[in-house]
Length: 255
Image (cartoon, one colour):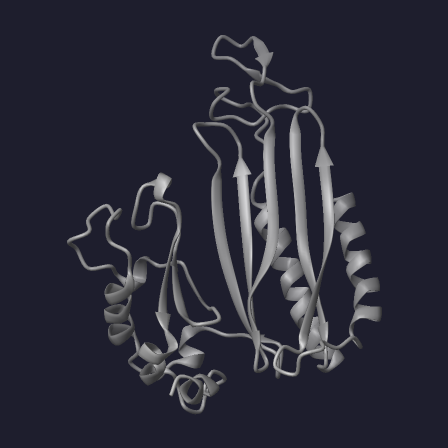
């Protein structure tokens, strides 16, 4: 709680002096700085790094974007809380003293430290569109930790996050699913012979060269394969882009 209050204070101060900064490139008018909170000891290793954006936009727009980013980063991390009575060292959280309770009621040293890392990456920053990735990693015991990626595509003209329905034409679902199946790497999928379904994806984003559909861990393939991002070149996806939507510039760009 103390860290969250401190973070809110830092964000408030940061917005005051970052709002007027500009980027050198006209096509990429958003600049990003990061603020970091860390906790490290023998029982836990936690680092949350979240972005603060600035640039040639209205102050209200920048404040709305930064507030949403702050909330999303801390909502991710707030979902992981230690249990009061861990059941087993390999599926349990340590107590503050670094122990867990065994089945017979006795306490033993927790074998591995609790870990949580949250960080940001810019995926696209042109033409008043900003796409940011949030990566969340958490180890709470077991064979391995878990990693989750979430994406937000902002229309910087108004600070609003965009959904696929905001940028693609009506009825895009089936044609987009067909494109996903054309470009998905199939060699390591659970069932490579089966069609990949759009409903199994967890997010979407845009990168420098294409529209991307994101599938999280285990959605299509084993853990060892990792998350799968299906990238479809703008040239292939341009027929699905709404000519009156915020990504309409991509139809011209892909010609």
